[in-house]
Amino acid sequence: MSALSTTRLEFASPAIPRGYVAYLQSRLLEAEASLAAMTEKYDRTKARFDRCCARRGIDPDTDIVNYINSKSMNPELKYWYAKVEHFQREVTAYGAALTGIEAARRMLGPGGRTENVRRGNDRRGLSRVT
Image (cartoon, rainbow, N blue to C red; front, side):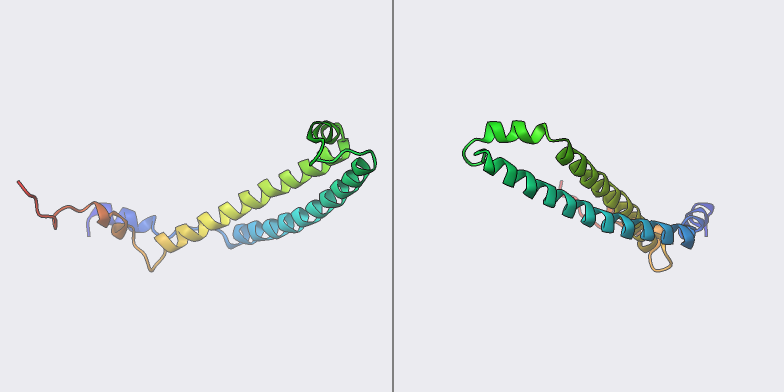
């Protein structure tokens, strides 16, 4: 075995602490629960806002300009929507980190070897037409 292949095998199994993975999983679950709660609060606030606008005769179907202006001036809607966006970003970040760790484990773990990844670039088996 050459020095290059032993170096590859040393890096083949990433040492990711189980505690870190457990931390990411717990944070993902917390972020998902918070996202659900904030989405529910935003939906209730928006429904209340829509009812208030409807009482004043402002409807997104008939008077979109006044509806958008009223919506942009409502601090409570802005607040809850910002919270929803925050937790959407958290869910995305923790989910992406866990997906990346799992992909690295599958690709570099004991079942898969890094030498097999480069197989697609091998051109020896191709016949050339001249």
